[in-house]
Image (cartoon, rainbow, N blue to C red):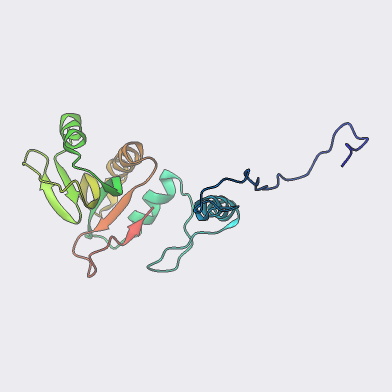
Length: 181
């Protein structure tokens, strides 16, 4: 095709193009491998899709610190909660250095695969299995006068966990946290 006689075009969104590779003699090589197509589809749905919680079906959306604090403060007074920073989610490894670093930062407890440990304890983590590791930032009871402490705890969790925070309602019936933001 010839180039059009235009200097500039505005308002057009970018398009996805899949480039066909040159032919090779490898029998496992195809025009578009499954992984390449998966990457393009994942990119496409990350931009146009709307994520929903697989447990409750609610829409997942970004919230400000004030919105998170307001949601937590709406819980019934006297409810015991834990503010958690999910630092490892579904990855393999031992993470001994990571845990010792958090101990040096001043944290006391960690939850590894749902089980709570003191950071001073000798924690054995199987490096061949996938793990979820959450640092317990704070444990609180919902009252009117905890708003500033709750805000600081949420900010700390967001800073250490790449803008994620878990609010675990202690004593909830299921093993999963009730609120994840």
